[in-house]
Length: 397
Image 1 (tube, one colour):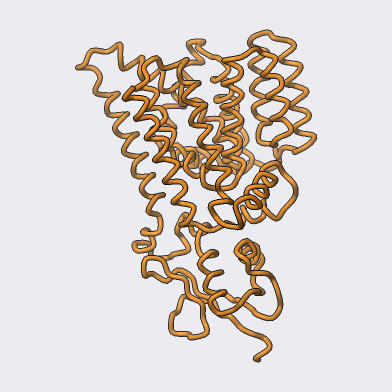
Image 2 (tube, rainbow, N blue to C red):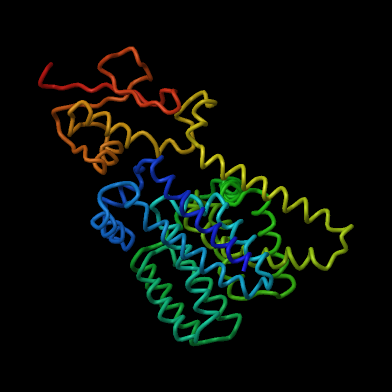
């Protein structure tokens, strides 16, 4: 009973923190492009949420938080197959929640959170129900988003390994359907982006966890301990590494797949730890401690990211600057009775979400940070100026 209460408390606190974080960030240019761009399933979900709960940051990010919540539940259910002790499953959930890439996918409106949920949903249905329900799920995912194209490719190899001709043929069709609808980028020439790709994976998972996951996937391949979860995790990782030799890949297309390797890594870690005498468990305790330390540091950096402006020389180098400024800037403009503005397209798109339309009457021009100019609009975080712009009313010139 107590472990279940701890699990519920962890999930509850996680959701509350995510809800709080929605008030500290603004819509990014990428998110605004998605909201005001071409039709997609995610865009449709966002429009429904905004129509239901109002034009605000919480309503905008609520679908991603909901996807994250159900992803946690699905991962817990999937992990029962790999971890018998509920306490180990709770540790797995805690690691999942604290993983930097998972935190960002739960807050940022992008297809990463949707893909994570979809992948976990497929694995859960594949393990728990008849195979025919997996067919329905995969068909739905093929239409839902182009990010699942590597799932179908993984399942093509998996069904070949299992010698399941029907499942192989079905996934080939879905792979071709996904490419026909969404396409896939394999262009480029050798430019040596492998180290960049490894660095991004390390940032998303923390270095220790990424190295350990890579090691576990390789070890399971050698020992023939490979199942559907291994294929869905390993195949996209290999593809991303191969593509990085010729192009700078979009890591968000591949990282969600590697997250599915967490139950495999947790199972291998616990099994290796349990079979050793206490005097020989030091190496595993060190790995776990380092992983926990990296995760906690990353978590608090994300949670208190605004405080970093106090120690960063150049505010433009802040990792989350693309998620800042727009909301506060729109409020400052409204305080000056300015409801429309002409500025560079990225900021104009972001301000549109907060009720500042485009027009030629007022011109907003970013300038060097200065609080001495009475005509300037200055945005400050933690008493540090991070953005300054001049507003010009052309009717007064």
